[in-house]
Length: 363
Image (cartoon, rainbow, N blue to C red; front, side, top):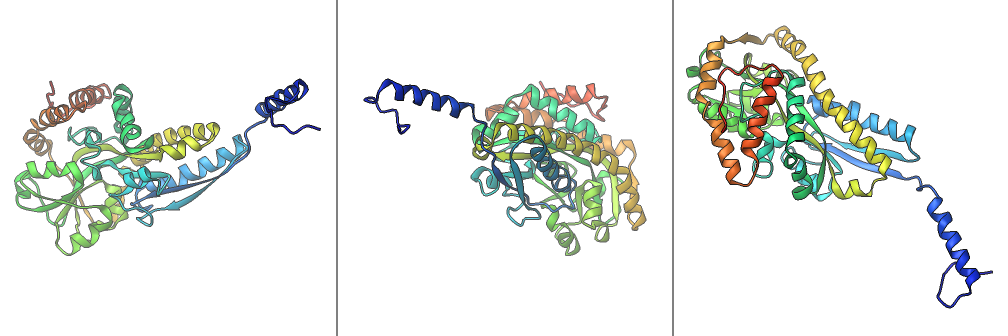
């Protein structure tokens, strides 16, 4: 009886046995794996995209892996900053503290400045469905947008995330842009520039801090979509919700650590990629369906929900008309495809039927 060692001095019969054993080994299916994945966000499940991570992405991946592979996947979920904070999620995925993270690119202005491109074109579409469609078309046209996650941050993009349309909630009534001059108003990342151009005092903040900050006078209002205003009860500290229509912005993403991805079985990778794209689409449709419902909720709880005349939107947009070109030039000089991305975004928005209050020019 021979050991399967295949040393050189062994007789030909043993060599034949080695070859046969190797062939049998190659024919065997991959062993079933019990896979544990840590998924997290700094935001709580009150945020629509985090709620969908919890109620769609996690159970759907779990179900499909069980149904279509020999493997089993178990998720360890950590939301509301229990594992990573809102501004630390990219680094958490990069280092492997978590395997999958959902986060806003707004908290990565130095790492992902290009990914806030819709912010650079304010008063865009208020449709989250069109916003995420537009963003996906731009990402598909410009490989840098996805590749930078792999090349620089050790992660792979699973899905884009649309937000609802941004408006302005305040604890004071306003009717014209000049009414905002000198007022402290909060935003996140690059949308602070919208406030700066309007003469307001911009304050960087995040949703988990919003209620207390507005209550204690750190600032008097928030650039915020209605779901955030409803779910975080900001109407209690700022009763005026004004539909200015800054646009629905796709500048969040769901990513997975690249090392973890590479260790996963191919059939599990396929399911994660598949569900990630379905999740991406769902962030658009769910937000779009919820927008009118959330405005009605705000009205029912006593918020003063109002629309502004188109002239106010045009005035504000006019103050920003040179900014897209300024940003494109700045990003180009930094070695990023600023002009390419902004020109593509302008064109794709118009293909989707959007009419800008002021048509930005990027050359």
